[in-house]
Image (tube, rainbow, N blue to C red; front, side):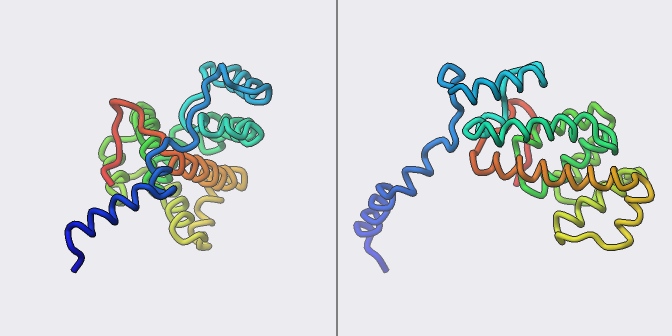
Length: 206
């Protein structure tokens, strides 16, 4: 067994290593707008014109690569506000994706919106707990089964696909896939950059 003195020495050494120092730094830190280069400023201006507010949330780390940030924002504009499955089911799907990635910023941002759109608190709580929501509508069931299956198995069974295609058509199926891909990408960005959740909003417990 290591002596207490040796143990403390090893801990002190570990804290001097580059990885330990990096862990204490904010990753992909927000760039002050005054420090934007020309490409970043153009991306921020386009964001403001489209969203009617300055760059926020996952787009702050994305500003380190404006050519990723701009098409990401454009894709999000459609998937969040204009997808073929509608904005209420889109918010429902976003919660399922956020839970799968344990993504607290997206959860804190979208859970209140889902509630406002008519998704019951009981269903939101069940998703947060990693459980199948009770009393889902036919549409919610189709979306939940499709998204959960895709995220967990990386495939879709024929029966699940047939139900989604019959209800929403090929465009709706593609938009559900798009939502999975888009919000998984955003979750990865947020998990890596460690953007904190929205203050005062609900968060996931694990």
